[in-house]
Image 1 (cartoon, rainbow, N blue to C red):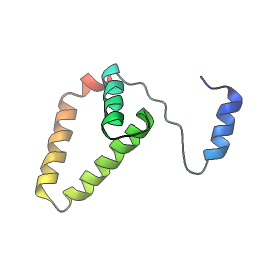
Image 2 (image 1 turned 90 degrees about the horizontal axis):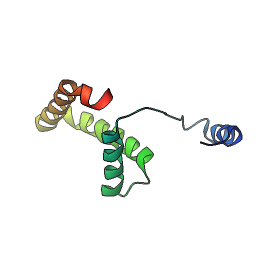
Image 3 (image 1 turned 45 degrees about the vertical axis):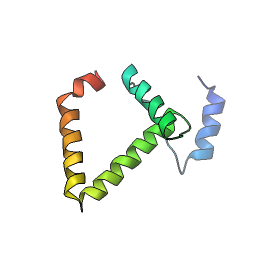
Image 4 (image 1 turned 135 degrees about the vertical axis):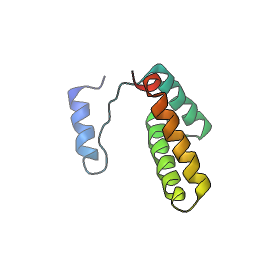
Length: 89
């Protein structure tokens, strides 16, 4: 864990563009983030989270114009909600 001084310096440096996000996630989620990072040449799990949000946003935008994209998004949301307990508890 970073020292208090290091955390303070990071926050001062990045206060306008970043916020730290600490979340507890199942081991499966950590493994998937590592896989995403490797598959898409990302710099680790933090960037994999950002990339995942970017891909979701892009899919949502595409779904406004494409029935196929809307179906993929709807299916993914339904599957996640159906199996939510596997991912968050």
